[in-house]
Image (cartoon, rainbow, N blue to C red; front, side):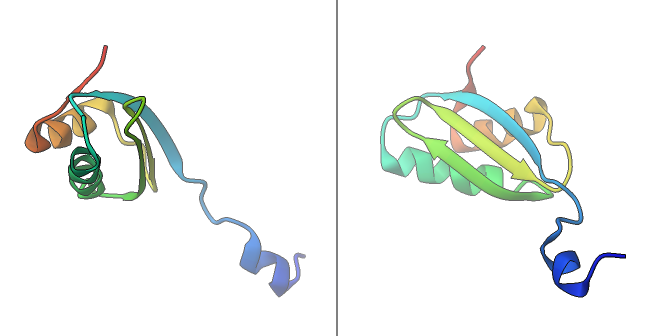
Length: 82
C-alpha cells in the first residue's frame, strides 16, 4: 500500500495533450488572443503558444479534438494549418 506521501505526488489522471499549428498569428497580441480563446474550452488547463512557429500545445483533463480548437481559433480570427 502506498504511503500518503507517495499518493500526494502520484497523478490521479494524466492530462491529454493536443498539438496544432495555428495560421495568422503575427504578434504577441495574437498569441494572447489564441491562448484566451482556447483556454475557454471545457477541460483545458494549459495552452502553450509558440508565436515564431505557430505551434500550440493544449493540455486538458479530457481529449480535446481539433474541431473544438478550430472553433475557438475561428472566434479569435485564426485558423488551423493543414
